[in-house]
Length: 388
Image 1 (cartoon, helix red, strand yellow):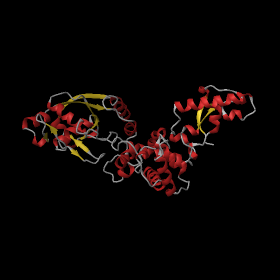
Image 2 (cartoon, rainbow, N blue to C red; image 1 turned 60 degrees about the vertical axis):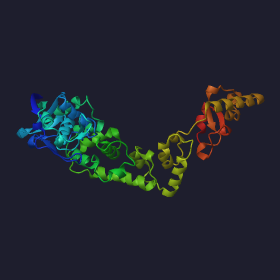
Image 3 (cartoon, rainbow, N blue to C red; image 1 turned 90 degrees about the vertical axis):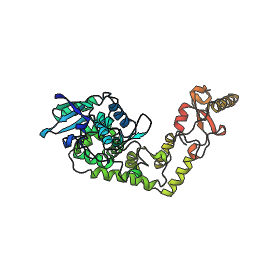
Image 4 (cartoon, helix red, strand yellow; image 1 turned 30 degrees about the horizontal axis):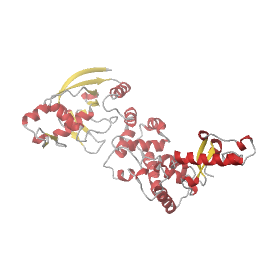
């Protein structure tokens, strides 16, 4: 790959700057010659009042901002390979999209700055490597140079590798914070829209898992439609909302795609499920609330999903001591289930570390995690007992 080091002023870079506040839309500079956000680039993430401000403060302080990389295209056009966040910050500031604080702590937009400060910003020199090479070479380097700084997350990297119309359409739909559906989706999906988390969930669900996303994107890279993704994603979201009528914060980030595949053909009574969710939500013994929904969908059998609160050490020790004393007095095993058997363990006295605390009446059937409902079983019988 061929590279040429050039110098540009901020004034040149932001000439003709066009920026649509809707993520994933066109960003241009150098009087239209420079595409600031190619398809494979992540969305702008510096608009937090800190990183964007730090870029402008650095220019005012004449601090170096590091190298920026452009890709040279045909017809003398360029696109940003690395440096999109900094360049977008330049353009947004000089077009009065955000303010910085001056030495007196007062907010100042570019248009309100003293003329000499405006000129200092616009005349700042930026070092740029212009690169020429094959698509594979360009994207390989893009991956390498993004190891430093704020690294690309996995989905942002996949967007770069499989850039094309499919990714462009996907970002427009699932990486756009102005999408009217985002608020509804956010009840069930965790993460950031602009960092591609919603797009990643949609791809994960339709492809069958995170490990399958890359293959799916490769297969559909040149598609001019994302209807399959949108339809499947909507089906999952609508199913969750129809089955569970109450929305709780712990529902965010659950593997709804996997649960949809397992249970969407099962008939449920939403009113009954709502009652059961509320009961579990108010149960002090449930440690993992995020497991409530899968537990209910699966027929309330897998109590491990709830991480039901276990007996404390004092209760286990007291129960062990009493069971052992009682067993020795009658010559039977201190494991009640071993004592009922006819093998060599019928009279065996187990050490405490060889036993587990168990609910006499299963928690799932109303048994409390209390001393009165505690028994010690040998590990073999405790594993075999389950919820019975």
